[in-house]
Image (tube, rainbow, N blue to C red):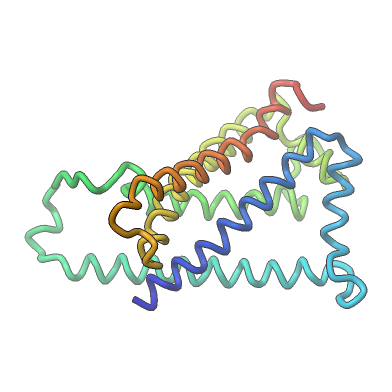
Length: 218
């Protein structure tokens, strides 16, 4: 139960971060000054109580801890469930109505999401991967990286964000169940919440790169 609770709590932290990050990304439609100004303001959070960028580093450590705990709990629970099944059932294919497509893709979708996070940081945060040219401007890094000639970057981004959406859909549902919110009579509402949040986050993250690729933002 402790591991499931840890997964639910860390998952909630990551979902809230994704929503906030998505909102920030959408500022690209307000132009370079607004987008770069937003990025710079994040470095000044907590100043002068904290040094410039101090809040960001604290937040990054919290996110890193949440990710590691989330992965550890997921792998441990999966291993326990696998060992608990009789050997005769491990290689049988069974149809389970309760299991959605999202639940089947949680494991490999999680791997894709992890790879995407690493690429995303190297691309748009640290500027180590710079298709279209490196830049000190967050706006220019985003616009440069999703130009039509780098369609493969956009394609990888789209596939990864869709995987995030499936992961969110199943994860939010499971997390609510673990925290005891998923009670009789609420399943329909909670399913709608899980689907709604995952769709909003997915579409919100896809809009900026697709807008750049199709020339709506330049």
